Figure 1: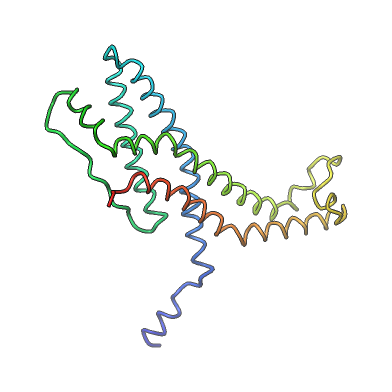
Figure 2: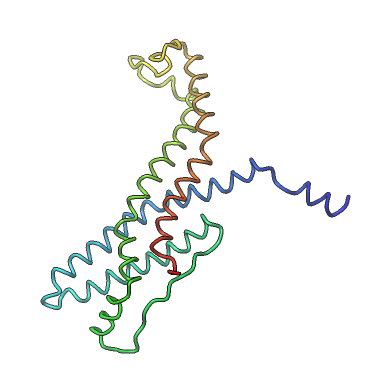
Length: 214
């Protein structure tokens, strides 16, 4: 067998390439939910408290903490974005200062536009993540629930009418199992596309705020 023939044999089928990619996209979206929650709670709360106390200088450490944490969340997100796009995004250049004065360091950070983009991402990332998380969990639940309904559907209360019965397909157990299997197949077929679009939605929002400006 020639090298060309071996390469042809070893190339995975397009359908098989969807499996790891769907897993990567799913992990990106699901792990983004707690990160989005944490970034809002930590960064926005600390920044708001810092602004309120800034007039008596007690808020300065809180402002530094909030902006530092938002930058940390931004750095983490840049690494996560690379798994979705397949390549790292261009990291922006942050303004720096050699001054050891805490006030001057804060002024330098506050004067950096990227600081506010990082904070904006920390405060607003929950919006695209909420959409992506809802779609991803719904499609996974629809597929897995439909595939396994025959194993646990019998344990549901008898008084409830199932969807196939409401749609006029009958109320026999076999009919209901087959109906949910068909639904599960539909979810499974569309799962890669939905999860891919969900991950891209969240990643593109992050990239727009966290990547280097041209």
